[in-house]
Image (cartoon, rainbow, N blue to C red):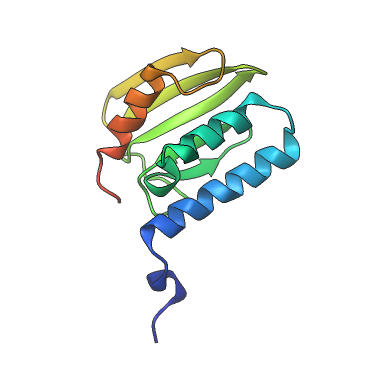
Length: 124
């Protein structure tokens, strides 16, 4: 018997994770600029290329099929700092770490470059 997960494509798994994130922020942060950034990232197709998970004041992007990341898996963490500011970390083991601040919250060329670095990694 085939499991339900095997019938679901990678793109579907990634897309569903973004839908859950969007619902969460729409419900809790009705007018927050992060909602516009999420929509913009989805318009650019990142919801089909990256998995997204949520923490209390941040969300984590990866190429993982699983919600829990292993320490060596690359990730991009977008943490809400204020109503219109993000602190972003790109991490790739063992020691690659890039940080930047994004104010106002929008898809900047620097943020897009980090997203492209992450998308270049294989799905794991």
